[in-house]
Length: 350
Image (cartoon, rainbow, N blue to C red; front, side, top):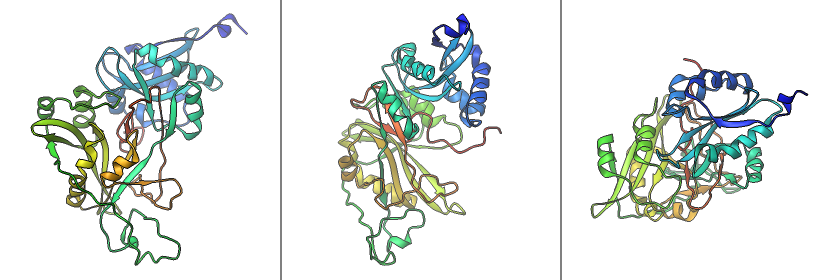
């Protein structure tokens, strides 16, 4: 073994000029060709800012591992989401060391990741971080019976007839309304609401994520009381079915205090009805299930018999489980659109 092979790896931030080198490394060492880095619009949107948002591990000038990250805010100590993470075969230990070094290299206050593999949770727990399944919540629109739902498959008690049985839909109330924020100018004029949650998402992030995002359109809603901004809600309506004839309402982000959600329960039900959607759904870690129940959303638990499809274009009538990690679990909240998630399934090359 040479002295170079014995030497400790160097961990550092990537240079802007290394975009091509990092892309080649990922394509050579990952299991398949990732659209996330191979489609230029994704790579630019997620990883290109004042610097190339990658950290690398190398030994003797040879790359051993890379990790791309996404900023939640523009500050000197940002909250970040780890995104693509790739190591040379046989150097997974170095890859884990690089992940452990990520907060210090980027001066991040918090590092999290949306959609990790379930069997890697143990690795992040080894680092002292929290890793767990992301809870899934849903609200069905009224239908005559369980069999009348075309995408969702509500659990039916043993012996009950799905053509007769009606699933329970939680009651809703609420005194607050939703106002659409249709422009960045309007967003900037409103500012940010109070929230105890992390990651901290600033106006720069909200603009990039929901107004300038490639390929998808989002609806941003503000919630007010007596002229005071209380929260933002972000939704996306998906047209599913063989001919796009079935709508699904997705709640993909919420910025505000937990107590606001039950107060917009009736407004959320109104969105569901206006969209003509079969159901509304939300992946969220960090906000208690009781809060979602008070807003009219039931929790889908693993093995409870209910199916709330995640893949809708084309529809795949099965449940999808997501997992996450965070280096700072206190007050941490994660939604479907965080990190590099909630993007269309596009091929790696145009």
